[in-house]
Length: 199
Image 1 (spheres, one colour):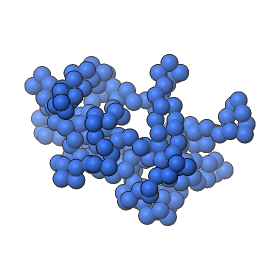
Image 2: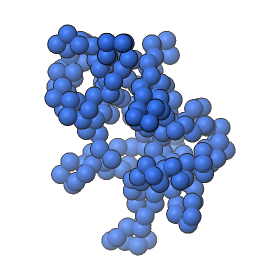
Image 3: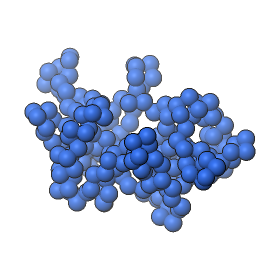
């Protein structure tokens, strides 16, 4: 998992203060799945309109528990591939349904519709996210549930920080997610204008 094509930074916004009246747009992936998002900010750079988007529903991550190589009594959480998510999705959906949450196979990220339970200290997990030790970022998740599928234990989590996407509005008025390369090229200009707007 990398955050090269998205920003998980919180530009002065509280996750509990999402503007319910904010306009919404739908991001679509190559498989035709959609993700309904609030438009948190709209920016114009070099004559093009860019938007900062936050999913309407709660983002969900599913990790697998794995024994720690250095300490067999300890377990760590590891990423899983999309193919594995396809296999475990029905089980994960049933588990979240017990918590009055509906798991959705939405674009870009899994999401859950419904009200999340209040986070407690015991539910908070801190993970190091990144491809190598030199570029690790710590991220906190709320653990929602654990479940087993074919003797493998999995954890269903939601990030505590808002999950944000930068997209460009096309000529038809639809958002297109920036590619990782385009995001890196535009990142400084987008973030400079974003923080200027907040001042």
